[in-house]
Length: 170
Image 1 (cartoon, one colour):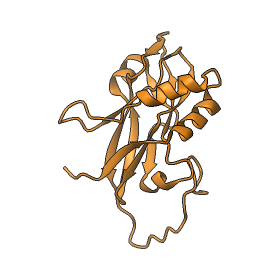
Image 2: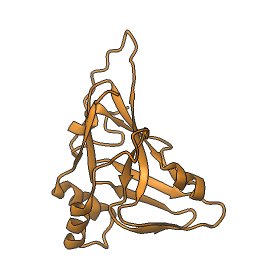
Image 3: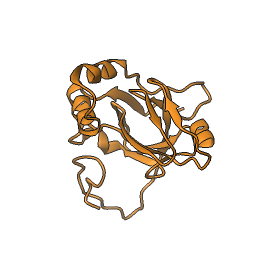
Image 4: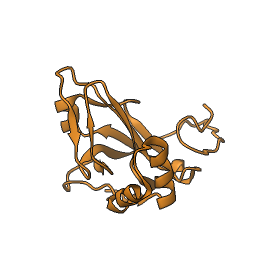
């Protein structure tokens, strides 16, 4: 196995700002408590490909509902690698939990963006069986898998990242 990345928490200030932007019902004390409880993603077993990202707070998601979750996590990885995020397979199987962009792609230069490379996940309970998803604080939500990628021989990308979605201007 190649060791090509390391997870970090975003700063307290970044997490607080992003939580307040998304969830107005939480006060500073509650958000700081969430931040202190954030664990870095880990693999469950030596044979697991995916690193489990955990919920920083408890929530329920009824069928058809969507939630955008600031994970409090950022990742520094070697150039030539990407982190792909997928719903945990059990949640997808039981609740049709889906990521709104199907697969989250975290590029190596995202770590250096203006928002500290804060990874968000936007999830939808797409259950057609009427099942409500209840997620406990600290429960696994999505899994991240590192993949190596290549570029074309005539590649000449020169853009610079300055944030998250759509920040490369393409």
